[in-house]
Image (cartoon, rainbow, N blue to C red; front, top):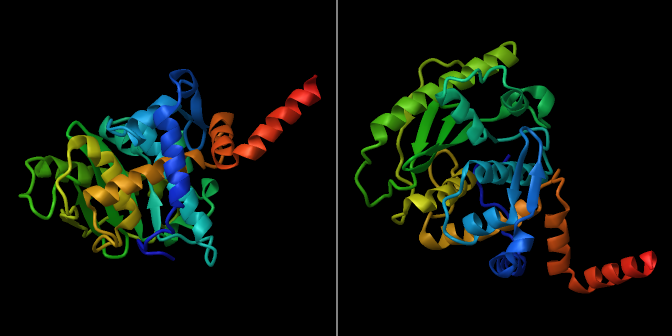
Length: 291
């Protein structure tokens, strides 16, 4: 199983082509829902949101983060050909922290059950060592990891770099970090008979992983980067302005490849961009067929 190893890089030409499409496409086309997905929770994303958050500089929002996490979870399973029924990391979408921190009944929420119960997963979740959860805050995104082997909680704020002092939000983030794993263990103990890890004797760390100074608007992309490259000790690839920007462009490409997407617009756009001659032939064939 991969332990935060570097994922296979995306073809640069594809990434640039898709980015250029969203940067220049008319608003009438981008107003359509390019992503419509229902598992573990229904959501939809317009082309305009993809452009603003993954091509331009808007902060990645709750729904976009969910789509990105879903797609990278899929690609991780696709890449693990040798042990498809095992996984090293297990994601929880932002909805989990939203429900927990608002004191909602998260245990009996269907989407949470799908995300954590064996019936909704293709691998043995009890084998996962590193659980992670992106958490939205007014100051920007953070990500919380739970290492089930070492019983360590890692709270990572992208705005806390190797060159900066601990942030003033650290005390509040620690309160969040202790509340969320308590909720996680409440769920797994409800869904499973005999979860293999105890909720007792955990420790907490606040590692500074960023090599650059990032703004609030950049924290979403940084958090996705960290979830991809953190191995439980360090980042496999340095988190800099350059690597974050590159990863953000790749996120757009991955969102377009989301499996289970009910919207035809992402598929049609990819087809036109990556196989333009075939798409033109297909369109002409359709016109002849209907004439």
